[in-house]
Image (tube, rainbow, N blue to C red; front, top):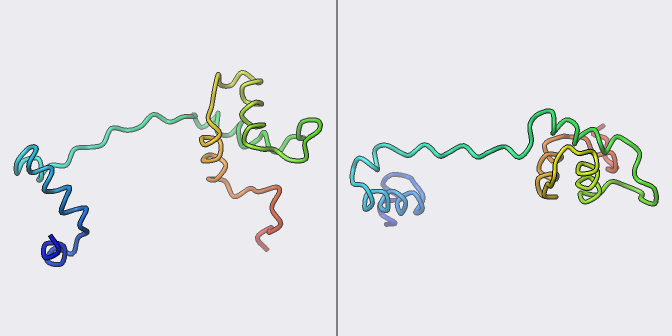
Length: 107
């Protein structure tokens, strides 16, 4: 396999995956990759915008900053969603450059 990797300048995973596709469906399966199914988006654009806006509001009484769990609870309280994973909230917020708690303001 190492020789194939060097000859075609590909990773060992590519060689292995190509070999597996060939075993499962022959040359046709190797020549025509399957188009991966599109995963459902957890939130719509409007829902993401609302999620990003929540940390701009005052934090709940007794808290000094918004946490992922506080954001999740606020979203559920507002009736936007029935449930949402903290990881989903983290992924949405990571896409923004806003970090109100950070010390670096980018200047």
